[in-house]
Image (tube, rainbow, N blue to C red; front, side, top):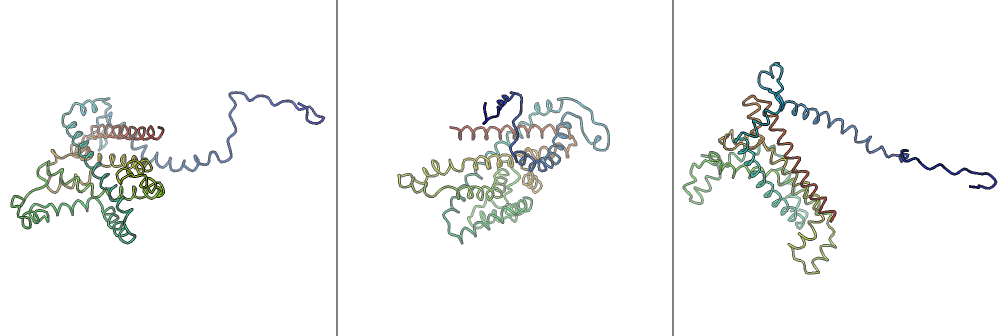
Length: 318
Protein backbone atom coordinates (compact mmCIF):
# COMPACT_ATOMS: atom_id res chain seq x y z
CA UNK A 1 0.00 0.00 0.00
CA UNK A 2 1.17 3.57 -0.78
CA UNK A 3 0.99 6.24 1.92
CA UNK A 4 1.91 9.51 0.17
CA UNK A 5 5.39 8.86 -1.16
CA UNK A 6 6.23 6.03 1.27
CA UNK A 7 5.55 2.40 0.79
CA UNK A 8 3.76 0.88 3.78
CA UNK A 9 3.86 -2.86 4.10
CA UNK A 10 0.52 -4.47 4.87
CA UNK A 11 0.07 -5.64 8.45
CA UNK A 12 0.65 -9.35 8.81
CA UNK A 13 -2.49 -11.33 9.49
CA UNK A 14 -3.02 -12.20 13.11
CA UNK A 15 -2.07 -15.74 13.87
CA UNK A 16 -4.88 -17.91 15.16
CA UNK A 17 -2.99 -18.69 18.35
CA UNK A 18 -2.24 -15.07 19.19
CA UNK A 19 -4.30 -13.78 22.09
CA UNK A 20 -6.17 -10.56 21.79
CA UNK A 21 -5.03 -7.71 23.97
CA UNK A 22 -7.14 -7.28 27.09
CA UNK A 23 -9.23 -4.18 27.32
CA UNK A 24 -8.28 -1.70 30.04
CA UNK A 25 -9.98 -2.71 33.27
CA UNK A 26 -10.96 -6.18 32.05
CA UNK A 27 -9.28 -7.80 35.04
CA UNK A 28 -10.77 -5.37 37.58
CA UNK A 29 -13.87 -7.48 38.41
CA UNK A 30 -11.71 -10.54 39.00
CA UNK A 31 -9.32 -8.55 41.16
CA UNK A 32 -12.21 -7.24 43.26
CA UNK A 33 -13.69 -10.72 43.68
CA UNK A 34 -10.39 -12.40 44.56
CA UNK A 35 -10.28 -11.42 48.29
CA UNK A 36 -13.86 -12.58 48.81
CA UNK A 37 -13.18 -15.84 46.96
CA UNK A 38 -10.09 -16.48 49.06
CA UNK A 39 -11.99 -15.90 52.30
CA UNK A 40 -14.86 -18.09 51.06
CA UNK A 41 -12.43 -20.87 50.09
CA UNK A 42 -10.76 -20.76 53.51
CA UNK A 43 -13.96 -20.57 55.56
CA UNK A 44 -16.14 -22.91 53.48
CA UNK A 45 -13.93 -24.80 51.05
CA UNK A 46 -11.38 -26.22 53.49
CA UNK A 47 -13.97 -27.54 56.01
CA UNK A 48 -15.90 -29.05 53.10
CA UNK A 49 -12.77 -30.86 51.90
CA UNK A 50 -12.15 -32.15 55.43
CA UNK A 51 -15.78 -33.31 55.63
CA UNK A 52 -15.47 -35.23 52.37
CA UNK A 53 -12.22 -36.86 53.51
CA UNK A 54 -13.74 -37.78 56.87
CA UNK A 55 -16.70 -39.43 55.15
CA UNK A 56 -14.31 -42.03 53.72
CA UNK A 57 -12.73 -42.77 57.10
CA UNK A 58 -13.60 -44.55 60.29
CA UNK A 59 -13.60 -41.49 62.53
CA UNK A 60 -14.98 -41.99 66.02
CA UNK A 61 -14.26 -40.91 69.58
CA UNK A 62 -10.82 -42.52 69.51
CA UNK A 63 -9.80 -40.36 66.55
CA UNK A 64 -11.04 -37.27 68.36
CA UNK A 65 -8.50 -37.99 71.13
CA UNK A 66 -5.61 -38.50 68.72
CA UNK A 67 -5.88 -42.00 67.25
CA UNK A 68 -5.14 -42.07 63.50
CA UNK A 69 -8.27 -42.48 61.34
CA UNK A 70 -8.58 -45.53 59.12
CA UNK A 71 -9.51 -45.17 55.45
CA UNK A 72 -12.46 -47.48 54.74
CA UNK A 73 -13.55 -46.30 51.28
CA UNK A 74 -17.29 -46.28 50.62
CA UNK A 75 -18.22 -48.30 53.71
CA UNK A 76 -19.87 -45.30 55.42
CA UNK A 77 -21.95 -44.52 52.34
CA UNK A 78 -22.97 -48.16 51.88
CA UNK A 79 -23.97 -48.38 55.53
CA UNK A 80 -26.06 -45.22 55.31
CA UNK A 81 -27.76 -46.03 52.01
CA UNK A 82 -28.71 -49.49 53.27
CA UNK A 83 -30.01 -48.22 56.62
CA UNK A 84 -33.85 -48.05 56.69
CA UNK A 85 -33.73 -45.38 59.40
CA UNK A 86 -31.85 -43.00 57.11
CA UNK A 87 -34.51 -43.34 54.41
CA UNK A 88 -37.23 -42.73 56.98
CA UNK A 89 -35.50 -39.57 58.16
CA UNK A 90 -34.87 -38.42 54.57
CA UNK A 91 -38.48 -38.93 53.48
CA UNK A 92 -39.71 -37.22 56.65
CA UNK A 93 -37.36 -34.28 56.08
CA UNK A 94 -38.36 -33.91 52.41
CA UNK A 95 -42.07 -33.92 53.25
CA UNK A 96 -41.53 -31.54 56.15
CA UNK A 97 -39.47 -29.14 54.01
CA UNK A 98 -42.03 -29.25 51.18
CA UNK A 99 -44.86 -28.28 53.53
CA UNK A 100 -42.84 -25.50 55.13
CA UNK A 101 -41.65 -24.09 51.78
CA UNK A 102 -45.11 -24.06 50.21
CA UNK A 103 -46.79 -22.45 53.22
CA UNK A 104 -43.97 -19.92 53.67
CA UNK A 105 -43.96 -18.89 50.01
CA UNK A 106 -47.75 -18.56 49.81
CA UNK A 107 -48.09 -16.53 53.01
CA UNK A 108 -44.98 -14.44 52.26
CA UNK A 109 -46.24 -13.52 48.78
CA UNK A 110 -49.69 -12.67 50.13
CA UNK A 111 -48.19 -10.41 52.80
CA UNK A 112 -45.97 -8.73 50.19
CA UNK A 113 -49.00 -8.08 47.97
CA UNK A 114 -50.86 -6.72 50.99
CA UNK A 115 -47.97 -4.40 51.91
CA UNK A 116 -48.08 -2.98 48.38
CA UNK A 117 -51.66 -1.85 48.93
CA UNK A 118 -51.32 -0.58 52.50
CA UNK A 119 -50.73 3.02 53.45
CA UNK A 120 -47.42 4.27 54.71
CA UNK A 121 -48.31 4.13 58.42
CA UNK A 122 -49.85 0.66 58.40
CA UNK A 123 -47.11 -0.67 56.12
CA UNK A 124 -44.49 0.65 58.54
CA UNK A 125 -46.18 -1.10 61.47
CA UNK A 126 -46.40 -4.35 59.53
CA UNK A 127 -42.73 -4.04 58.58
CA UNK A 128 -41.73 -3.49 62.21
CA UNK A 129 -43.70 -6.57 63.25
CA UNK A 130 -42.04 -8.67 60.56
CA UNK A 131 -38.60 -7.38 61.53
CA UNK A 132 -39.20 -8.26 65.19
CA UNK A 133 -40.20 -11.79 64.24
CA UNK A 134 -37.21 -12.09 61.91
CA UNK A 135 -34.76 -10.71 64.49
CA UNK A 136 -35.79 -13.13 67.23
CA UNK A 137 -33.25 -15.96 67.59
CA UNK A 138 -34.67 -19.36 66.59
CA UNK A 139 -33.99 -20.86 70.03
CA UNK A 140 -35.77 -18.02 71.85
CA UNK A 141 -38.71 -18.22 69.46
CA UNK A 142 -38.96 -22.00 69.95
CA UNK A 143 -38.97 -21.61 73.74
CA UNK A 144 -41.79 -19.04 73.54
CA UNK A 145 -43.82 -21.25 71.20
CA UNK A 146 -43.09 -24.18 73.52
CA UNK A 147 -44.79 -22.25 76.34
CA UNK A 148 -47.80 -21.65 74.11
CA UNK A 149 -48.11 -25.40 73.43
CA UNK A 150 -47.20 -26.45 76.99
CA UNK A 151 -49.16 -29.43 78.31
CA UNK A 152 -50.32 -27.95 81.63
CA UNK A 153 -49.90 -24.18 81.36
CA UNK A 154 -49.99 -23.61 77.62
CA UNK A 155 -52.15 -20.79 76.32
CA UNK A 156 -53.51 -22.92 73.47
CA UNK A 157 -54.77 -25.68 75.75
CA UNK A 158 -56.35 -23.13 78.07
CA UNK A 159 -58.18 -21.44 75.19
CA UNK A 160 -59.37 -24.70 73.68
CA UNK A 161 -60.50 -26.24 76.97
CA UNK A 162 -61.68 -23.25 79.00
CA UNK A 163 -62.92 -20.83 76.33
CA UNK A 164 -64.14 -23.16 73.61
CA UNK A 165 -65.19 -25.94 75.98
CA UNK A 166 -63.12 -28.68 74.30
CA UNK A 167 -62.34 -30.78 77.36
CA UNK A 168 -60.24 -33.28 75.39
CA UNK A 169 -57.52 -30.65 75.15
CA UNK A 170 -57.16 -30.34 78.93
CA UNK A 171 -53.54 -31.30 79.58
CA UNK A 172 -53.10 -32.29 75.95
CA UNK A 173 -49.48 -32.96 74.93
CA UNK A 174 -48.71 -31.50 71.51
CA UNK A 175 -45.14 -32.79 71.30
CA UNK A 176 -45.40 -36.40 72.45
CA UNK A 177 -46.97 -37.66 69.21
CA UNK A 178 -45.14 -37.31 65.86
CA UNK A 179 -48.25 -36.05 64.03
CA UNK A 180 -48.96 -33.21 66.45
CA UNK A 181 -45.20 -32.56 66.78
CA UNK A 182 -45.00 -31.88 63.06
CA UNK A 183 -48.05 -29.64 63.39
CA UNK A 184 -46.21 -27.44 65.89
CA UNK A 185 -42.77 -27.42 64.22
CA UNK A 186 -43.89 -25.98 60.83
CA UNK A 187 -45.73 -23.17 62.62
CA UNK A 188 -42.52 -22.08 64.33
CA UNK A 189 -40.37 -22.40 61.21
CA UNK A 190 -42.87 -20.70 58.88
CA UNK A 191 -43.40 -17.91 61.41
CA UNK A 192 -39.68 -17.16 61.40
CA UNK A 193 -39.22 -17.49 57.62
CA UNK A 194 -42.16 -15.41 56.39
CA UNK A 195 -40.48 -11.99 56.99
CA UNK A 196 -37.58 -12.80 54.63
CA UNK A 197 -39.94 -13.93 51.86
CA UNK A 198 -42.31 -11.00 52.38
CA UNK A 199 -39.57 -8.35 52.31
CA UNK A 200 -37.79 -9.90 49.32
CA UNK A 201 -40.94 -10.30 47.24
CA UNK A 202 -42.13 -6.83 48.22
CA UNK A 203 -38.84 -5.38 46.99
CA UNK A 204 -39.42 -7.18 43.69
CA UNK A 205 -43.00 -5.93 43.46
CA UNK A 206 -41.82 -2.34 43.67
CA UNK A 207 -39.98 -2.90 40.36
CA UNK A 208 -43.11 -3.94 38.47
CA UNK A 209 -44.22 -0.94 36.32
CA UNK A 210 -47.59 0.45 37.34
CA UNK A 211 -48.37 1.28 33.71
CA UNK A 212 -48.18 -2.39 32.76
CA UNK A 213 -50.59 -3.33 35.56
CA UNK A 214 -52.96 -0.53 34.58
CA UNK A 215 -52.88 -1.63 30.94
CA UNK A 216 -53.65 -5.21 31.94
CA UNK A 217 -56.53 -4.01 34.10
CA UNK A 218 -57.95 -1.93 31.25
CA UNK A 219 -57.76 -5.00 29.02
CA UNK A 220 -60.05 -6.81 31.45
CA UNK A 221 -57.50 -8.91 33.37
CA UNK A 222 -58.61 -9.78 36.88
CA UNK A 223 -56.44 -9.72 40.00
CA UNK A 224 -55.39 -13.35 39.63
CA UNK A 225 -54.61 -12.90 35.92
CA UNK A 226 -52.56 -9.76 36.59
CA UNK A 227 -50.57 -11.61 39.22
CA UNK A 228 -49.92 -14.75 37.17
CA UNK A 229 -49.43 -13.16 33.74
CA UNK A 230 -47.86 -9.80 34.60
CA UNK A 231 -46.32 -9.80 38.08
CA UNK A 232 -44.89 -13.33 38.19
CA UNK A 233 -42.83 -12.95 34.96
CA UNK A 234 -41.26 -9.79 36.38
CA UNK A 235 -40.32 -11.33 39.74
CA UNK A 236 -39.71 -14.95 38.64
CA UNK A 237 -35.91 -14.77 39.27
CA UNK A 238 -36.59 -13.52 42.80
CA UNK A 239 -39.15 -16.26 43.43
CA UNK A 240 -36.72 -18.92 42.20
CA UNK A 241 -33.87 -17.70 44.43
CA UNK A 242 -36.11 -17.36 47.48
CA UNK A 243 -37.58 -20.83 46.90
CA UNK A 244 -34.12 -22.38 46.62
CA UNK A 245 -33.02 -20.69 49.84
CA UNK A 246 -36.14 -21.85 51.66
CA UNK A 247 -35.64 -25.43 50.48
CA UNK A 248 -32.03 -25.37 51.69
CA UNK A 249 -32.89 -23.83 55.05
CA UNK A 250 -35.87 -26.10 55.72
CA UNK A 251 -34.03 -29.28 54.75
CA UNK A 252 -31.19 -28.58 57.16
CA UNK A 253 -33.29 -27.06 59.97
CA UNK A 254 -31.84 -27.97 63.36
CA UNK A 255 -32.46 -25.54 66.21
CA UNK A 256 -36.25 -25.62 66.26
CA UNK A 257 -36.54 -29.41 65.96
CA UNK A 258 -33.85 -30.09 68.56
CA UNK A 259 -35.34 -27.59 71.02
CA UNK A 260 -38.85 -29.07 70.62
CA UNK A 261 -37.44 -32.55 71.17
CA UNK A 262 -35.78 -31.29 74.36
CA UNK A 263 -39.07 -29.82 75.55
CA UNK A 264 -41.02 -33.04 75.12
CA UNK A 265 -40.75 -34.66 71.70
CA UNK A 266 -39.66 -38.19 70.87
CA UNK A 267 -36.33 -37.89 69.10
CA UNK A 268 -36.37 -41.18 67.23
CA UNK A 269 -39.73 -40.48 65.57
CA UNK A 270 -39.22 -36.77 64.92
CA UNK A 271 -35.63 -36.49 63.69
CA UNK A 272 -34.98 -34.46 60.56
CA UNK A 273 -31.72 -34.45 58.62
CA UNK A 274 -29.97 -31.76 60.66
CA UNK A 275 -30.84 -33.34 64.01
CA UNK A 276 -30.11 -36.84 62.68
CA UNK A 277 -26.61 -35.83 61.60
CA UNK A 278 -26.01 -34.24 65.01
CA UNK A 279 -27.15 -37.32 66.92
CA UNK A 280 -25.14 -39.70 64.73
CA UNK A 281 -21.98 -37.56 64.94
CA UNK A 282 -21.96 -36.23 68.51
CA UNK A 283 -24.47 -38.55 70.14
CA UNK A 284 -23.20 -41.87 68.78
CA UNK A 285 -19.68 -40.55 68.22
CA UNK A 286 -19.47 -41.73 64.61
CA UNK A 287 -18.18 -38.69 62.77
CA UNK A 288 -17.36 -40.64 59.62
CA UNK A 289 -20.98 -41.72 59.16
CA UNK A 290 -22.16 -38.21 60.04
CA UNK A 291 -19.80 -36.82 57.40
CA UNK A 292 -21.18 -39.25 54.82
CA UNK A 293 -24.75 -38.17 55.60
CA UNK A 294 -23.69 -34.52 55.34
CA UNK A 295 -22.11 -35.10 51.93
CA UNK A 296 -25.29 -36.82 50.71
CA UNK A 297 -27.37 -33.86 51.94
CA UNK A 298 -25.03 -31.40 50.20
CA UNK A 299 -25.31 -33.32 46.93
CA UNK A 300 -29.09 -33.38 47.29
CA UNK A 301 -29.24 -29.62 47.87
CA UNK A 302 -26.89 -28.94 44.94
CA UNK A 303 -29.05 -31.11 42.67
CA UNK A 304 -32.22 -29.29 43.72
CA UNK A 305 -30.56 -25.90 43.23
CA UNK A 306 -29.28 -26.81 39.76
CA UNK A 307 -32.73 -28.07 38.79
CA UNK A 308 -34.47 -24.86 39.81
CA UNK A 309 -31.84 -22.60 38.26
CA UNK A 310 -31.79 -24.48 34.94
CA UNK A 311 -35.58 -24.47 34.82
CA UNK A 312 -35.65 -20.73 35.42
CA UNK A 313 -33.01 -20.07 32.74
CA UNK A 314 -34.90 -22.28 30.28
CA UNK A 315 -38.13 -20.36 30.90
CA UNK A 316 -36.36 -17.02 30.47
CA UNK A 317 -34.85 -18.12 27.13
CA UNK A 318 -38.26 -19.02 25.69
